[in-house]
Structure formats: C-alpha cells, structure tokens
Length: 333
View 1 (cartoon, rainbow, N blue to C red):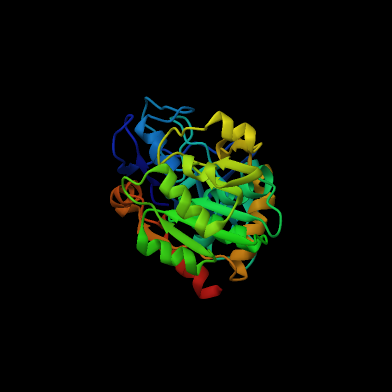
View 2 (cartoon, rainbow, N blue to C red; view 1 turned 90 degrees about the horizontal axis):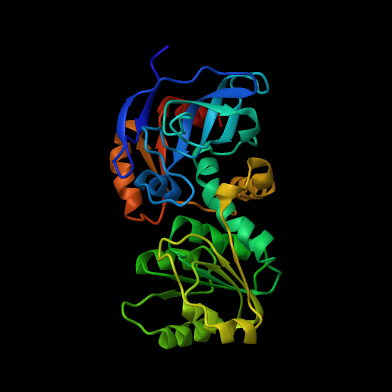
C-alpha cells in the first residue's frame, strides 16, 4: 500500500504544502476512508490563516473539514461503502485534504445510491449553511419573500435554490459579480441586483425595495440597506462574514419593525443535527432539482486551488485525491 499523502499547514498564515501523512492508528469507533472528494471551504482557509475565533493551530496540521470517501476499515460500515464524513482538523487529528482519513463512526453517513460523489461533497457544509438557516432559524413559509445577500457565492447560490424549492413566493439575489448574478437568475431568483462601489445605503435600499417589495427573510451577511426593506416581523439570519465582520443595526428600525436577528454557525452542530438537511439536499441533487458548480483539482494542485478559493471563485473547489475511484464510480453509475 502506498504511503498516504496530504496537505499540511505548518503555522498560522502559511500556505499549504504537500507531503506524506502519518495516518493515526484506527481505534474502536473509528472508520478509515480513501478520500474521493474533499471540498475547500472558506472556513478551512480562515482557520489556516490563524484568524478564526474558535480554532487556532500553532503546530502543523492537515486541513479539511469534510469529504466523500470509500470505507476501507470500520466496525460499523462495510468496506467499499460510499460515505460522507465530517472531520475536525487539528494537529492531533488530520483533516480531509489527504488521500486517506481516520474519522469517528458518528461523523460518517452512508451516501444514497446513485448520488454523484463530488456533488454530494460540494453540498455538505455549503448546503447545510443554506438549508438550516432558512428552515430552522428563519422558519421560511411558502409565499414569503427572501432576500439572499452574497448570492454569487457557492452558499448563496444554493440558498437561492433552497428558498425556491421550499416555496418562497419571491427570491431576490444580491451580489458583486454581474456574470454570476445572471446564473443566479437562472437558478431561480426572480430578480438580481449588483452591488455598486460607493453606493449609499438609502440608494441601495431603494433599489432592493423596487425589486423585492417588503422582505420577510434576509439571508447572508446583513447590510444596513437590507434591514430598511424588511417587512414587520421579518427574520434576519447572519451566515458568514466574508463581506465584512460588522454591520450597523439601527435600534429604532429593529424595534419598530420587530425584527428577529439570529446567527448560524454549522461548526457548532454535529452531523446528526445536519442529517435531515443533508437528506433533503442529496435528494434534490440526485433528482436534478439542485445545481452546484464545481471546480475539480488533483491533490497535487491543491496550492493553486487554495489561491483560487481565496479569490472567491463563485463555485465549489473540490480536491479529488483518488481520480481512479471517481472514474470507477462513474463507470458503474
């Protein structure tokens, strides 16, 4: 058997380097996988930078927070089973950006038959970050108007589709990339708005209101302008802060319209809590009701993929350490 390989972050802020991996010995309650598809997530880059509030690793570690793989050793799952896995990378626990992975049995879910492995991986963290805030936090109801901020990102594109599939009456996408906004329209947005450099809050609010009317649910990183277009008792869910770590919330507006503000962080949820969302997402993906753009990279190309992810590619970057396993799946599908 060949020596496992992986990416390694040597210190906060260092770029990933490729090398051999000393895979931990499997213990009872753990599963060993051959990694087939490992998405790159903004969270992975944020943790590696040393700037994430909940995790900072001073010692070298293997990054990566999720993957789809094939079981090679396990007490719970048959070898050859295709599964999705979450992992919590640290200096003591290698992450998913590797050829092999050891993960707790409870952090593994078998994939439904016929589900594309790359797509299944791509809608893991990103899909749950779209579905759960809309369903659990906002309690989206059929016929409501949803404003998706950051709609050109991978998560935002999924959120537009989830809102549409859940029966939203009107879905508005807001983002910075004009060409991707046209794709967002094709994914189900009723209208899209491009953010303009230097535009004042009142002008942006007027443009949003003209496109959407009063908004029942705001999803993403709330802009002050989006709060101005909220209907009474609207729900505002903060997801991510790539557009900026802070926003101003006028107290009078918050009280006067009785807005509900909440935040979502998938990092604090276990896989069991995410299972209903993943089941819905995988079903929609398999049935052709959910589209996710993916960019594929070999493990050797990870440094370049890392740079591309840092530039917000408007698609999911997915590392494929074992292309032959992916080809085998496709041949058998």
